[in-house]
Image (cartoon, rainbow, N blue to C red; front, side, top):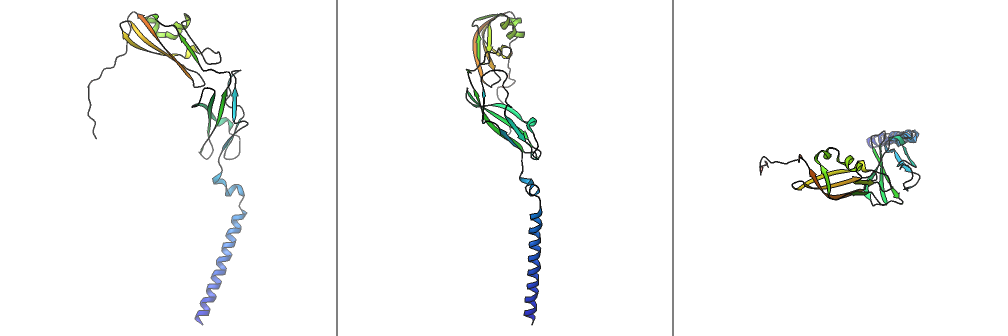
Length: 217
């Protein structure tokens, strides 16, 4: 008798559990798809073409043919940060596009920038320069005004003002000067020349207070 009662009780319990399970599955199925998948949605970046071709005509627009959608499906193209990376080579470069979507996730995508009719930057500086000490205050401007230096970006555009210079003293009044320039496509050029500087030159000095130090382990 007791065994029959226990069996009946287990049967009722199993039936109730089955009803609850079916109801739970039914309720889950009623949820909108967007809500059930919300945690898996993230922004995205898309390109009209996987390659961006530039031949030097006009200004380079890295955002040409680029679109971004946020995690809520709304346009987020204005959030994109586009840069030319150091990857690739002279005529085929990599552009990285990045933005942060509404969920805080960083969305990144890359595409190739094809550089047509491009040979890289050029830099020319007259060797054995004769300078005055005061010329060092604005050396590039002085050299450019005397047509002793010239730099181009690879498409015929003058970028002389972007040239940087370092000098190293070799002997009294004689220096080695290293001129370098980086264009907007992340390519660089460097030229080293001799220079003779007349007048008092304030050369930077490095002095060490000790010739050895002890560091705790």
